[in-house]
Length: 55
Image (tube, rainbow, N blue to C red):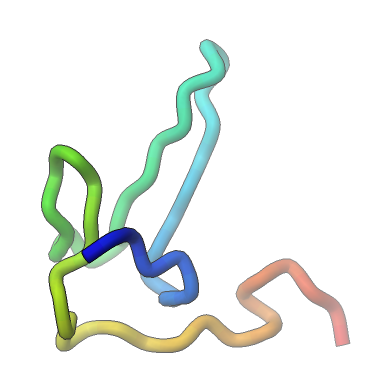
């Protein structure tokens, strides 16, 4: 399974060197390469307010 970037526990940041750091805030992902487990029990759809949108 690939990354579920539509999950509210997914986080992505860029470092000063230009590298992208992806992580699961709950730590239930596969580390290398970063991937979410199939049928993750902790998956929660990201809400519009979590995506940086304003209502």
